[in-house]
Image 1 (cartoon, helix red, strand yellow):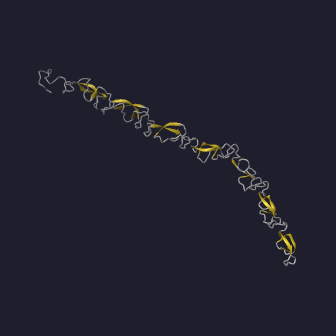
Image 2 (tube, helix red, strand yellow; image 1 turned 180 degrees about the vertical axis):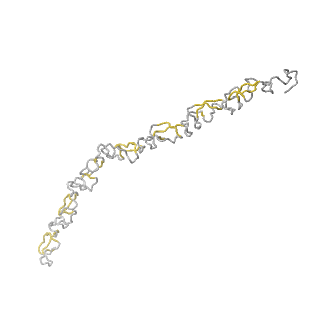
Image 3 (cartoon, one colour; image 1 turned 60 degrees about the vertical axis):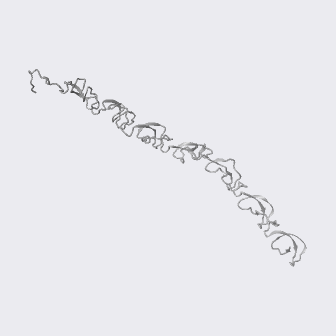
Length: 359
């Protein structure tokens, strides 16, 4: 600008020979100094040095800073970096890896970072915590007593080969996982003995080898004998006993010879299968139902012996060799049958139809 002056080297007031003033509106500012841009105005700059008009080299103007340590020059709240745990799956649980991140403070990790380092799978946001599971080698959903800490979505979703319980009594057999009450069967005859034992099995009705549902074996060292009952002696096998045998006896699939489980009654002769019953019989040789004598005890079978009767007659047979003659009376002689007799009479054994004598 042309200005009226004494000479070219004597500028009037308000003018100068120098045009290097960086801010001709502020008498304090004449020179530019190197500063860092502070875009968010938090007094922390970023980037490379730029020249800015300032009072001095230690007094940056608004929008500039002496430092370039601002980690986020677009956010006035963030200017420092802090160490956090890396949260790759962004589930708020960090891994054991650490990284520096720009944050408001050391307690406010940004997305992708966390204050914790307990994420068991930082590649899966559904898995963060380890849970106790039990090894399930046979895959029957029942675990053994061997436990492991595994990373899963939740405590009730064990991975394949593991279980939430440790109740499997045999983790090498998928058909066996519970304990059931059985009797020990030492001789393998399917009959056990002793007190019941808790044994690992398929179910309560299927005892494993060496065990039984039955605890009645009277000799568990001999597989041919296993049952014990009171038996009847029956040597001739006619179903009638000669009394209980000493015992009870221990036997197997078949009864011991000469014994029976039941009886039809006492046997009066256990050496003959045809003879078994005993009764007082009365003599009736001629079979006219009139007996002789007081009777005697006789051992016989299905039928009465010949010449005997079970019941005595009211009067004895006076002639047991003739079926037609059996009664005895005092008879009087009446040859002409006129009703008049001769003599004093005598005792006569006679048949029913008798016409030579008269009563």
